[in-house]
Length: 136
Image (tube, rainbow, N blue to C red):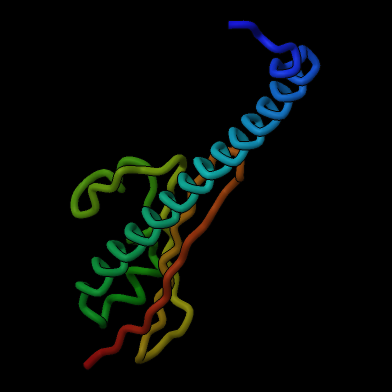
């Protein structure tokens, strides 16, 4: 069987194909790295939402008459090891802190729970939830 010269690729065609493949793979790598970063951001946001809801549930268990005083005294302003202990048992995010505040006094009482943490390469991030608690 005899090879025809016109059926083979030239060296320049192979180099162009290799460059196109390399640029495509580099572009895909960038997209994959961005997806991984966004996945981590979303994972931490979901974790912060869960942590803030857990703290809010603990706040709701307290007698309404002492609730505002406890919040103002920082009973639920937490950080570090206090978050890994009962009743929370959180898996901490970097530099995670919990800050609680009252945004409306009286009945109903407006309560805010804010979770702050350090996001890799993004600086400090925050997630908060607010609710009203009434004395029935």
